Length: 89
View 1 (cartoon, helix red, strand yellow):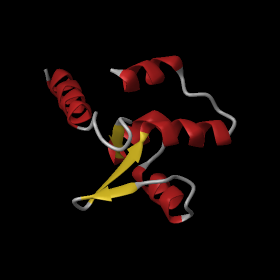
View 2: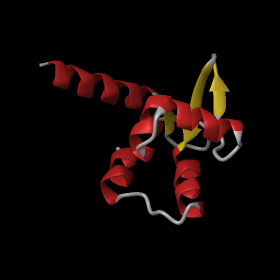
View 3: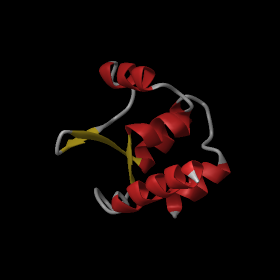
View 4: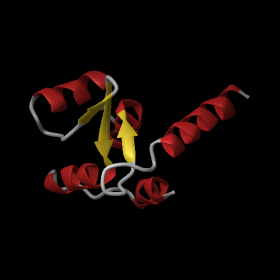
């Protein structure tokens, strides 16, 4: 049951963030870490080195899905199809 609760929490979080900034989906730190397969500390380093573009809204950090895709393209990596599909939902 705990696993389903986590999935439900993640989906509800993603649904709340679906509209903003040019109609792009907004991702939070946890979403980014899961998508990129990195730790929160590594993501903080990416922000510090200005490798990823981020937005602060009400003290929380968000990333536009299109900019995440551009970041992956810049690194020579493609966004996995299942993740791309998940971001479109």
